[in-house]
Image (cartoon, rainbow, N blue to C red; front, side, top):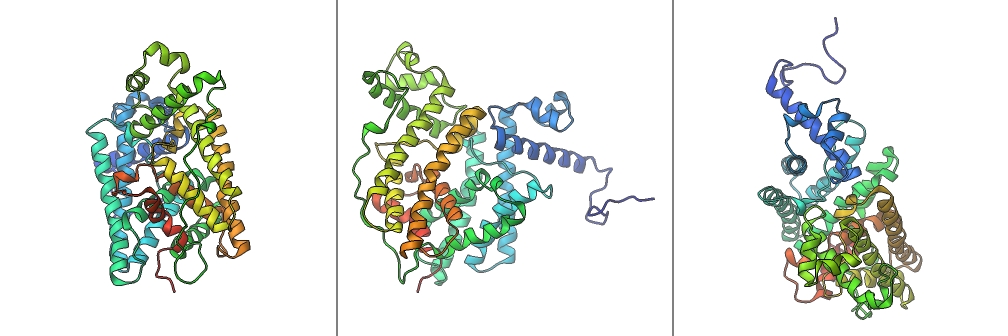
Length: 431
C-alpha cells in the first residue's frame, strides 16, 4: 500500500501527520498564501474574509479560528512576506561571501518567489502595498521588519564599495531603487511566459550590474533644463475653469494623504479639514473617496505625460532624454509641485478603473522604452532588453517618493542623480 506522495516522502525531517502544531502551521501558511494572492490581484479593499474562506473550502467560522479581522490578516501576510525575505537573506549570507553575489541572489529570489507561487511550488508572497493603512502597533512592526531588510541589502552595497568590488554608490538611494524595481515585478511578470521568467531575471540583473551607459568611465546626467510643472497639465473633472485651482488643491492633498496613509487609512473629512474648507464645499467637488483616488491617479498621469512630452522635444540623444525625464519626475515627486501618486493604492480601485489607469501608465512608461531604444541606436545606451530596463526604472520611480524619509536631501537634482545612477552606471566598478 502506498503511504507517500511523489516529492512528499516521509523522512526524519518531515512532520508527523499526527502533529497538530505542524497541521496548524500548514493551514495558516495556506491561508496567508491564498490571502496574499487575492490581495495582490483584487486588492485588500475588494477582498473579503468570505472570499478567502471560499477559495480554501473553509467556512468563515473556520477562518476566524486563524484570524479575526481583515486588518489582522493583512498584517500577518505582510509579516509573512518580510520574514520570508529575511530567511532568504539568512540563506544567501550563509551560501555567498561576496557582496555582488549576495545582491544578485537577493534580486533573483524575487523573480523565483513569484514563479514558485504561480507553479504551486511555494506560497504567494504579499506585495507590500498597504503598509501605510495598518494601525499601530501592526504598522510599526511591519515597518521595523522592512527597515531590517533594507539595511541588510544596503550593507551588501557598502561592503562591496569597501572591498572595491562595487562602485561607491550613494548606498541608501541605490538600495531604495533596487527594492522599488523588485517590488514592481508583481505588476508585470504575469505578461511573461513562465519558462522565460528566470532568463528575464538574469537580464534584469545585468542592467543593474552594468548599467545602460556603454562608454568608458561614468555617465553624469546634465542639469535639468525643464522648469516648474505648470498648472496647465491638470485637466480636473472637466468642469468650469474657475474650479480648476480648487480641484488641483484637492488632488494634491488627496495624493499626499493616500501616499502617507493608504486608501483605508485616508479620511475625506480629514482632507477637508487639512484644506480648511467646509465639508459641503469639499463634497461639492468630490463624490467619494474612490472617485478622489481615481482622479488623483489621472492628475499624476497628466503631470507625467507633460514631462515625457517635454523630454521628447529636447535636443540630445536617448540617454540624455531618459535622464531628463527621470530627473523631472523625481523633482515633481519630491517638491511642492507634487506629490505624484504612488501605485501602492492601485488595488483600491475597481477593476475597470484600475485597468484604465494601468493601460495609460503602460503607455506613458513606454516613453522610457522609446528613449532607451533611441539611445541604443545613437550609441548612448548599450544593447539591452528595452522592455526589461523600462520596467526596472518604472518600479524605481514609483518608490522614489519621499526619498527624504530615507536620506537627507539638500538638493533635489543631486538626489535624483544619486537615485538613478545605478541604472546609468551599474553596480560594478567601471573601466
